[in-house]
Length: 128
Image (tube, rainbow, N blue to C red; front, side, top):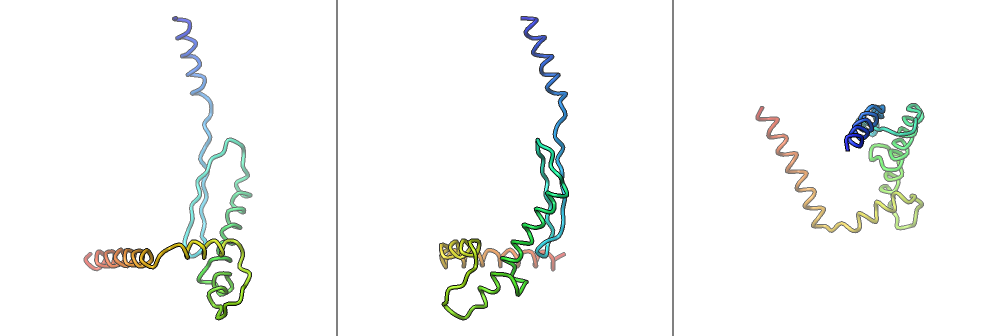
């Protein structure tokens, strides 16, 4: 029994001494705001390559969905004054499909809630 307890204690000590993976992080600017990424991996990852991949994906999303870029796919879609089919890609199709599933009542509730939050924030700011 003593031997078993001793071996268990040694195993716990040895397992506790293994190096832990360190959380890595980076941040940057995208889509008019900032982003922060924290990650860890059991396998070594090239942080510069990972950073480039994240930035490329954010740029891709921006080129698809930005309402502030006249050349984004969503802005081109929104500027259409025709019912003719246009090629927008799977992301925009998915967005429109989700939008079609939201009822007018849900939109009104969301808009009211957001507007109320803005009013409360504004009142708090004016009161200070």
